[in-house]
Length: 270
Image (cartoon, rainbow, N blue to C red):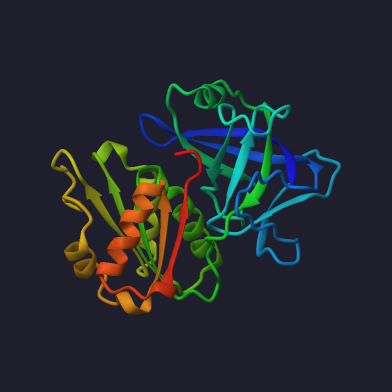
């Protein structure tokens, strides 16, 4: 489904990571422009929750998505295959919210410059939702293996679990180069403080962290086994660039994670 959405808020997450919140204005086309992307396009009856239309819209439209999905942000509608201006970003908000949020590590790319130049009330087109690596309400024990901006779909899932007050046991193993690169740390710290079933393991790979709650080193088999005692009982979610996803899947195999319990999705465009 292609929709037009309006920007309502921008939220800096780190020095170069920013979140963009949108509300739905109108439905443009029911046909997704998936361009060979493995997609899930839920009907309103199938999706658990949805982002509603913006205030003042005369349409009773809803943008349904599952926690863990992503969307194509379109700046060039004349050429949907234009990878310079149309890119895929994961939702970083729960579908229970009345807005849709995506988050991007901003660079000097043309797409990033388009995002940087967005002002409140500006509109963009969104194509989706897309992706099969999603949370299911009967998943009772999760472990995320993510790094950097790969945390965004995990944020969508964890926020959904918090909003729905589910009893899901969650361990997020989240690696970054430096402490300053940790996006959503404030939210994650609050969630694990109020929900004892949510646990975050921060890993910093370069400079030794000042925060004693952060580990210094790399995510390897020994660290995974030490931090996750019930590997055989958890569903493992892996999101990120293909090289990182492959490395984490191999790590899961080394640690004897059941293959059926690994859900992975490559970020497109890396």
